Amino acid sequence: MHRITPATVADLFDIAATRRIEQAAAAALPAHTLMQRAGLAVARLAMSIAPHARTIWIACGPGNNGGDGFEAAAQLQHRGFMPIVTFVGDEHRLPPDAKASLQRARDASVIFAQKPPAEYELAIDALLGIGSTRPPEGVMAEWLREMDTRGQPVLSVDVPSGLNADTGVLLSGSTGAHANTARFCVTFLTLKPGLFTAHGRDAAGTVWFDDLGVGDTTEPPTARLAGAPKAQARTHASHKGSYGDVAVIGGAPGMAGAALLAGSAALHAGAGRVFVGLLDPSAAPVDTARPELMLRDASALDLSGMTAVCGCGGGTDVRSVLPRVLATAAALVVDADALNAIATDSALQAQLASRARRGRPTVITPHPLEAARLLGCTAGDVQADRLAAARQLASRFGVVAVLKGSGTVIADDSGAPTVLNLTGNARLATAGTGDVLAGMIGAALAAQQPAFEAACEAVWRHGHIADTWSTNAAPLTAGTLARQAPF
Ligand SMILES: NC(=O)C1=CN([C@@H]2O[C@H](COP(=O)(O)OP(=O)(O)OC[C@H]3O[C@@H](n4cnc5c(N)ncnc54)[C@H](OP(=O)(O)O)[C@@H]3O)[C@@H](O)[C@H]2O)[C@@H](O)CC1
Ligand SMILES: Nc1ncnc2c1ncn2[C@@H]1O[C@H](COP(=O)(O)OP(=O)(O)O)[C@@H](O)[C@H]1O
Ligand SMILES: [K+]
Image (cartoon, rainbow, N blue to C red; front, side, top):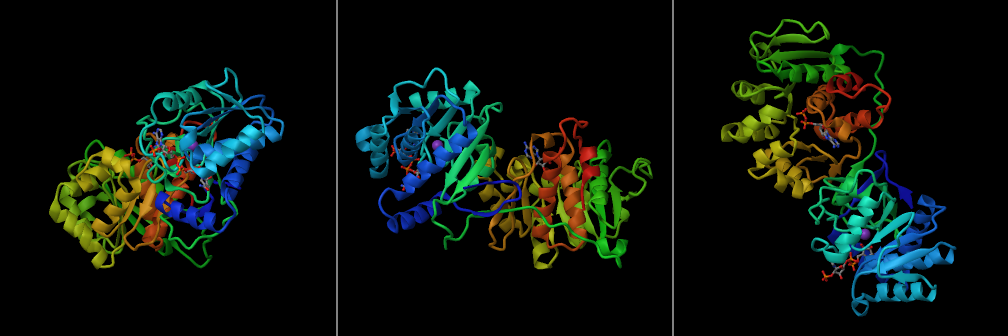
C-alpha cells in the first residue's frame, strides 16, 4: 500500500477496465482472496489513522464494497479494536464474496447496530464503491451526511460513496465533503481518475493505493498521473536567445494587469525575452515595477519567431488581432478572452485547427466556462466529465487542451493518455492566477519544450507554488504567484 502524492507517477483506469482487471485477478486466486486482502488493507490504514480509537464505525452497503467493510471489521476485532457495523441492504442479496465476509465478521463477534454509534473516533465508509449507480438516498444518505458533519476522520473504502470513479462527479449532487473533515481513501486494484478531479479530491482526501498483490496489468490506461517535472539545468554556454521570446498579447483598456501578470510569469519562468503587446493604445510605455518587460503596441510585434500568449485581459478587442496571431505565432498559448472570441467565430476556429497541420505548437487553457463556450455546451456539462471535455477540445482543434480547476486535465490528440494534475489548491481561486499559468506555459514553449510536456510541467509547477505556500506568508496573490514561477 502506498500514498499518492503530487510526485506519484501512475496509470489511472476507468471502472470498465477495473472490472476486467478484477475479474482476471479473481479467476487466478482462491475464492474470497481479493476481498480478504482489501479488508486487511482497510483495517491497517484505519489503525494508522486512529491508533487509539475506542470505537470505529463501519457503514457497510449492499454490494462488495460493503463486503470489504465486513472484512475490515473482522480484522479490526481480531486486533483488539471495537468496530461497530451498520449495514444497509438485504443480507440475502449480498454477492458471494460479501456474504462470506459478513459471516467472518459475525464469527469474529463484531457488534452490529441499527444506528451509528453516538461516539466514535473514525468512520469507515464501505457503502458504495465502483458499483454506485444512482444518488444515495434514505438511510445511506443520512449516514453519509453524518460522516460529513460529525468532524471525525472518514476513511472511504475504494471510492467515496456516491462518487463516480470515472468522472469525479458526486452522484448525490452535493458540492463536496465538509472541508473540515479529515478524509482518507484506500483504493484497490487500480487508481481511478474520478478520485483526482472535479469533486474527487475533496471527497477522497488523502488517497492510498493497494494493488491487492495483483501487480501490473496489460489494460491500456485511461489517464495518468505524470509526477513532478525534472529540474532543468542550464548549460553555461547559453544566452537569452537560447530560452526564446514570449509575446503576451492582451491588456485591453482597463485590463492591462492581466497581460502584465502573464508577462511577469513568463519572465520569472525563464523566458529569454518577454514582450507585452497591449491592446490599450493609451497604456504607459513602461511598467516601472517590471522594467524587464518590453511594452509594445500589440499590432507592432512580429510573432513569426516568438511564442505568443494571447487573450489575457484581451476583452473584445483581442478579436481583431487574433487572425494574425493564429496565422503567424511560431508557438501559441490561447487563454481567456481569446478563447471566448474563438468560441463565437467559426473562421477563427478553423484557423486554430489549421495550426496543427502547419506544425505550430498550440496550447489552449480554458476554465470550465470557457471550455463550455468552445464546445457549445454548459459548464455543468464540462464538469460532468472533465476528461472527456478536455479530449474533445484537443481533438476538435488539434491542440493541447488544459482544462483548469481542481484536478486540471491536460489532453492532446495524439492518443497518449490524458494527464491529471495533482498540484494546486483553492489558494489559486483568485483573479489572475490563470494569466500566470498562461505565461508559465509560454515560457516553457519558448524554451522549445514539446507542447504537451510544457503544459503538464507548467501546470504542475503552478500548483506546487500554492501547495508549498506557507500559511504564515502573505496571501498568495497572482502577482506573488508570478514572481515565484520557477525555472
Ligand atoms: N469482488 C471482489 O473480489 C472485490 C471487490 N472489491 C470491492 O467491491 C466493490 C465493487 O462492488 P460491487 O460491484 O458489488 O459494487 P458496490 O460499489 O458495492 O455497489 C453495488 C451495490 O450497491 C447498490 N447500489 C448502487 N447505488 C446505490 C444507491 N445509490 N443506493 C443504494 N444501493 C445502491 C447496487 O444495487 P443495484 O444498483 O443493483 O440496485 C449493488 O447492490 C469495489 O468498489 C470494491 O470496494 C474490492 O474489494 C476488490 C475485490
Ligand atoms: N480550487 C482550486 N484547486 C486547484 N486549482 C485551482 C482552484 N481554483 C483555481 N485553481 C487554478 O487557478 C487558475 C485559475 O485560472 P482562471 O480561472 O483562468 O482565473 P483568472 O482568469 O482569474 O486568471 C487555474 O490554473 C486553476 O486550475
Ligand atoms: K465507499
